[in-house]
Length: 598
Image 1 (cartoon, rainbow, N blue to C red):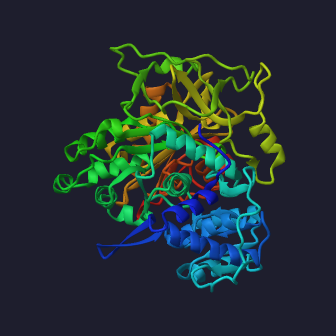
Image 2: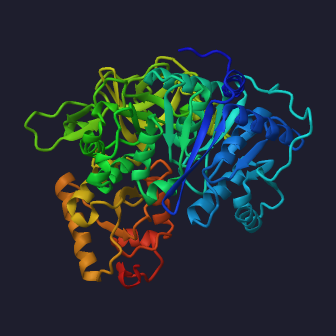
Image 3: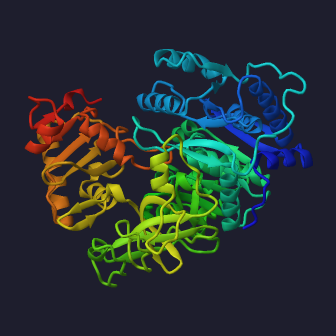
């Protein structure tokens, strides 16, 4: 692993000195279906970062936090680099643009990170100022960086306060809205993780990247923006709105901009496979797209990736270009990934043995089998599978908690010493210390890492370990009305652990009898598939099952909202005990708001 003391700031400054006219960032926008672009060279980016660093030095001390609230754009890029140049810690957060979830998350991050200054752009200044006033944050200085004048001569004389252990970034996890956790990522963490990523995929400065995920998201920020800048490459950005308006724009941009690496959640590959026309496929050339990345800490479904590869094979896309990885914020981002030349590895395993935390291949003729996608191999980190109760290191084929040790592992949680010690300073039963406890369930099969989801989200029923991901997938297959919508499954406290199923349903008005029949079908199907009692089903409007910016269903958040009676379901059918615990007195056992469903 080639990691010296040269961090991101020094790298960008060096690229600007050696090749100032080289494109650093290209921003694509669509205005009434017309594509527009603007760009920053490395020289322009370096000068803009120096200017902002000079202005920040007048208002902030090294180590102060700056809350970054921007739409996707070049101003965000200048801002995050300017903060790092000044030794100020950037804290990216979603723009509080009216979305209730964005508002609550931005407020939680602001209160926890205790920023010295809020940075935004002129187009968002009124929105941000109104939000600050409403949430009692107007004591903070708020600046539109594109309206600020030049810094005084000599205001910034170099990154004198930056060392390998200096805090580079505060990144918040996408769990609870009410209790966000900031992960402290150092300059060494960034450099090591970027080197791992570069080595895993044999990337060079000539390999262009493209991303459309939000820049406050881990993959959007680190993989698609900062890593290419570290490498001296060109990265192409587009907004999530432009992708969702027309997913074909993503693929067309990959072709047009000669992109070699791009990342997206699994659902995006399915959207493209089903939403792009035959004529559009014929007009694409995706043969140069060498790394189609998808990753996270949830099991990756193979079907969307296979469907995408088959759909775009006529455009030159190769299945071996798919790169599945395991990503976690507490280890900066990248932990493992499929190496170039390795075909997409989908293996079938015995589900009954998985319930006993043992990985065994399914019989060739087995009708019921669990298909798992490998998250690839690890190079540059010490990754162990550990019994979470005894802390004994487990052998290949045994499921346990993923523990990680290495220079990508973050410094801990912001202002949470007890939690940090528990999570970041774990010791195995044989005395090896300094491990990160991820809370994720995984298993080794040969040199390949398989990830099975969050341990805290597991459903332990009658001594069996059931996976919410499997049950969610089963619900989608139980009725065609669920096929392209999102659902989640979790358990709530009760004398016996009660399973709750939430699922989106289409927006057409439905009468209570129809929804009741649909709920009964879900219960019966899950009972047949898994042999468990399911007594609680609720249906929500499309888009109401919360996902992280990277597309991961936020089960913990949905459980929190369900228990707080904050979901406004269009229909729910709960058993008596669940209703007594989590619903207002007097609400009927089954409720339907189908008439109000728009």
